[in-house]
Amino acid sequence: MGFLHDEWQINRLKNPPSMSVHRYVRAVLACCVMLTLFVPLNRPVFGQNRAAAPSVQERAAFAQAQALFVAGELSEAADALERFLGTYQQSGVRWEAKALLGKIRLQQASYQAAAATLAEVIEQDPDGGYLDQARMDLASAYLGMGRKKPAMGLLETVSMSDAAPALRRQAYDALVDLVLQEADVVRAVKLLV
Image (cartoon, rainbow, N blue to C red; front, side, top):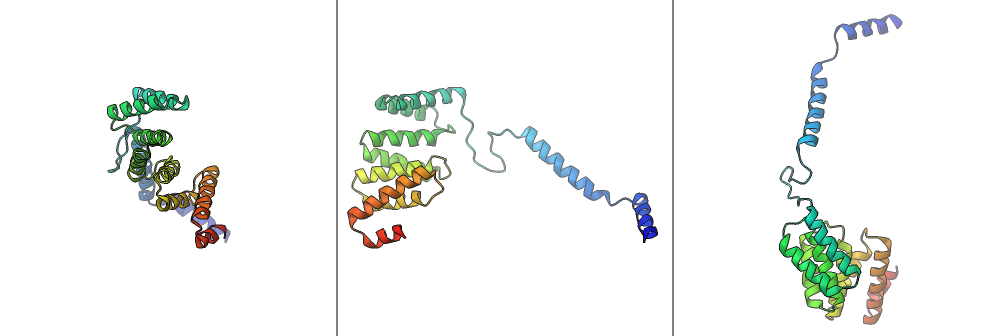
């Protein structure tokens, strides 16, 4: 067996495996390197419609609106967000800005305006990282307008989503409160089981 094994190794050295596999692997690696080097991250790739990364001015304008919101200056924050959305219509953070504007409208008790803005955010940016919070805010806007059924649907969606545990718990608690108010025994049992 040792002789055959040695002979196999000698033949392997004399006749190396086909170079086509090695060329293929090198070609694939070269393509990956070329894509990494020459395709900018903020440009559409292979037909995708990716928004451009926000410019310094966009980030500054959005940060100013966020700071006003955190400071409790709701009217000023809403005005700043309206200006931002008018100026930077194709911004990569426009849907996040609209979600914040919807939250502000909700806190101002402008339920119709909040619902319209938040529904647009949910419809137009279904992959946004702030989607579950936008659903919670939309549910609150619906409740403010007396529309309990769509609010319950949104709360149920958030309570069963991959959202942060605190947000899921908040949605679940609000849903349980609504179900108890409506005396919906079937749904209450379903939630508790």
